[in-house]
Image (cartoon, rainbow, N blue to C red; front, side, top):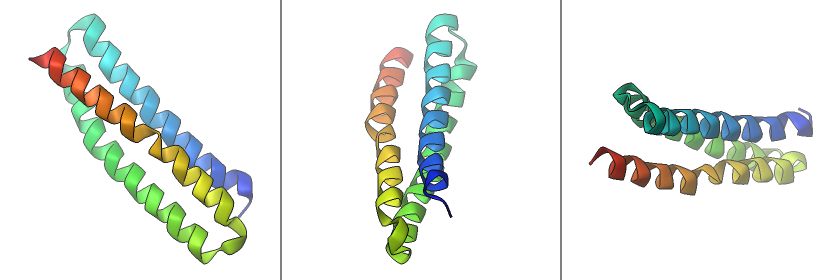
Length: 98
């Protein structure tokens, strides 16, 4: 597997989660449509599961394939950026819905 494919996994999952989260948050803020809030909730649940599986998969891959260790760990760290963003969006969403 090429190093660029490993990096692509982390970057693409990061951006997919980030963009979908922005769509849900700002879609609700600007339109007031509760379907965006519901979609954001489900996105939070399912994207967390997918990102965690990808994170642990990248860590395990890096441990077993030492030649790709640095790239796999770097890609896993990129996924960790979504955690504080998701927490922030969660609290913003809860405060808006009250």
